Amino acid sequence: MRPMTMLRRMMATALALCILWMTAALAAENEFTFALNGSSDGYVVTGYTGSDSSVTVPDWHDGLPVTEVGSGAFQGKTGVNAVSLPSTVVRIGASAFKGCTSLGEMTTYTASAEPPTPPDPVRTPGDANGDGAVNLQDALLLMQYAAGWNVSIDKSNADVDQDGTVTMDDVVLLFQYAAGESVTLK
Image (cartoon, rainbow, N blue to C red; front, side, top):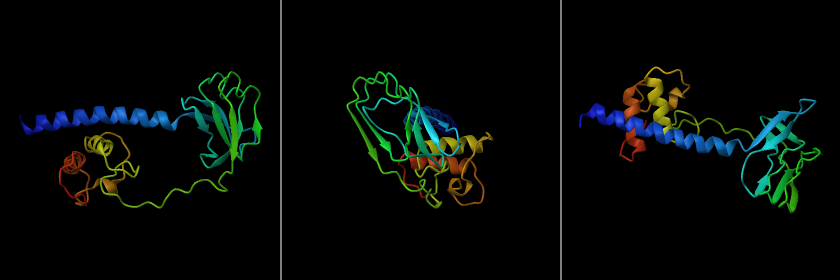
């Protein structure tokens, strides 16, 4: 098989795997829906789309405290049997838990005094998307960038051969690394 054909097949496989991985990751992150409260100093949980039986409502969202569980936010979630609310919640809307027939436990926890502080950026060679991991998702993103797509990358992390530019050479090195080959990312 010609090298370019093999590279194209490898890239197509990586694309498919990345799409599956990203779909699962986004589903986990988006279990709650939010809206700013009336005074715009906190968030209201307006819905829960997850499937966990034990649910912990977050104490912070986008740098502001979660202050309310809105009316109908958990309505009809029959699989929810326990909910833990942060101490920042000062109001629970009417019918917030209507139809939650398995709900038998509701607790509170002490919320963080301040929103979580993101860690200081550290250069991680190969971590083109800045999520703290080096994997096929980074290789795909790097491939898109090198092909001229309008995608955002961390150029410092993406330039894995440290030649000052992000090229297909970096893409190939990253695919090799993700495949478990013994390569050094600089």
